[in-house]
Length: 121
Image (cartoon, rainbow, N blue to C red; front, side, top):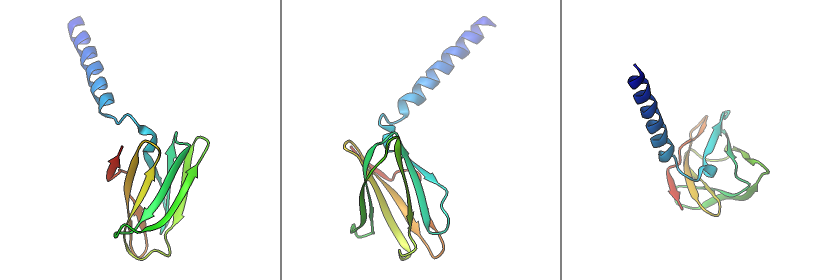
C-alpha cells in the first residue's frame, strides 16, 4: 500500500512538472476576453503595464492603434458598431512579444478569439 502511495505521489509531481513546462514563459500577453454585448468587445491583459494595441483589416491596413498603459494591467472595451461585417485582427505588442487575435464582426455581434493566432518574439 505504501509503494502505491509513493508511486502515485511521484506520478503526480511528474505530471505537474510537465504541464508547468508546457506553459509559455511570458504570460504577460495572455488576453482575457470579457463578455461583450452586441458589437462591443472587452478584454483585459493582466500583469502588463504598457502595450501597443492595434486593429487591422484583412488587407493589413491599420484601423486603430493606441499605446495603452495601466498600473496592474490593461482593460479595454471597443465598440465595433461602425465596422462592416468581416474579419479583423487585434494585435497586442510589448517590448518582448507580439500576439495577434481574430475578431469576427457580423450583422449583430462581434467575437474576439481568446487564443492568439500568432506570436512573434
